[in-house]
Length: 183
Image 1 (cartoon, rainbow, N blue to C red):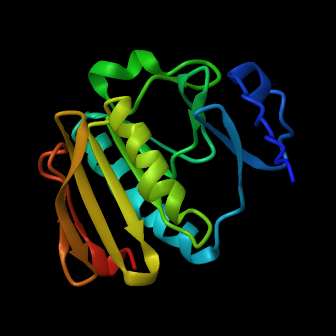
Image 2 (cartoon, rainbow, N blue to C red; image 1 turned 135 degrees about the vertical axis):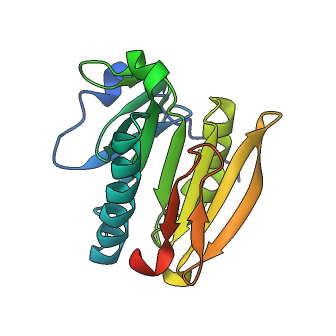
């Protein structure tokens, strides 16, 4: 019996912006991926983290913090919506009218049961490829945040912080987050 090869359609940013507004999508390596709505726990963690990072960035005049849904255009075949991201003051020029035109300095992705592979493998590789300096993977079920820093085009684990610890950002000097207040 012969096998039939099914070719996946490659999408571009032009295709991506035509997708319905009632669902969240991302474009990774030309593949259009639907992202389900986050759970209440995911949203609670997201807003607590975003609030603290934004306050720190604002008080210290470091740059801007954004939350999903907000498109980050990396190239024609890669458009993502990180849960939280930071753009430093000297790179604010990447903020476009409709999206971000380039990689943020810091990206935070909060794992959900449907996003483990996407966040821990696909996006981790993608963010490294586009030179995101710092990447946090938040694991709500384990009440843990893994902080990665970019070294030689690959992420190295800086530290895995537990709920009982205080997260310290290597690139946002002085940022400390008490994780028991997040989880």
